[in-house]
Image (cartoon, rainbow, N blue to C red; front, side, top):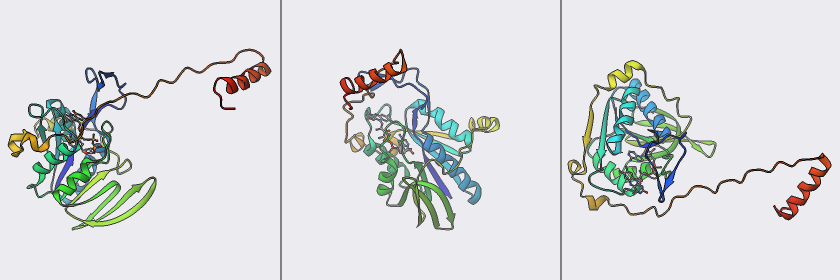
Length: 257
Ligand SMILES: Cc1cc2nc3c(=O)[nH]c(=O)nc-3n(C[C@H](O)[C@H](O)[C@H](O)COP(=O)(O)OP(=O)(O)OC[C@H]3O[C@@H](n4cnc5c(N)ncnc54)[C@H](O)[C@@H]3O)c2cc1C
């Protein structure tokens, strides 16, 4: 089975986001594999171990994304590909990312492509479905279970907390939802082995892509944090006086009664 996993480098969810000039400041921030992509990597490894074949992880990004690819290799992926766009294009959007991935994957005879259901930073959930459309293959989003029996695939997908059971066939693209599996931590031997596993670096030229063909179709014009919550007020004094004051405040300040 020829398996590909789409991996995105994202901010650590524990990070405090700092905005500077309408952009998220990256200096000093920790970066991780998009958590939904970890489910995709784990599932790919399990399918390979059960059915044979090879798992290749692919990311579009800069040199820095090598670290996340090495982590995926340490988890158990066989090969990694970094499509480095740093020198070619400044702004990418979902259109660009899906088109670059499609150009890379179009002649790879992938049986199964797995991605995250959403990236925790950009959060559009568009890349997987767009890519499948471009490749002309079946796709199912937000999956929580995957069973492959020859060419037939039985999937359970999450629908806002309910489950939907779907049957489809390979070649297929799926996007992973929380609950699909329990992603493993890279083991020490895994980390050592990952250093020797192949990590190929490609540029747009290697894919015969003209920069103009993957130019972003959308532009993010503003990013802002939610308004800070005001500190709560602690009332003092006798309980009956506090109740009176609370009612007064709800009436005159909060204006909810
Ligand atoms: C070099 C670079 C420059 C960028 N410049 C800009 C910019 O100027 N303005 C702006 O708004 N955005 C920019 N982006 C972000 C870019 O728009 C998003 O990465 C892309 O559109 C994905 O959208 P999303 O985060 O909504 O992903 P979603 O569609 O939510 O992601 C779903 C899944 O798709 C896959 N996926 C997503 N992104 C990638 C990727 N890069 N490589 C491999 N798999 C992926 C993963 O499996 C992920 O879980 C840039 C990204 C890069 C790498």
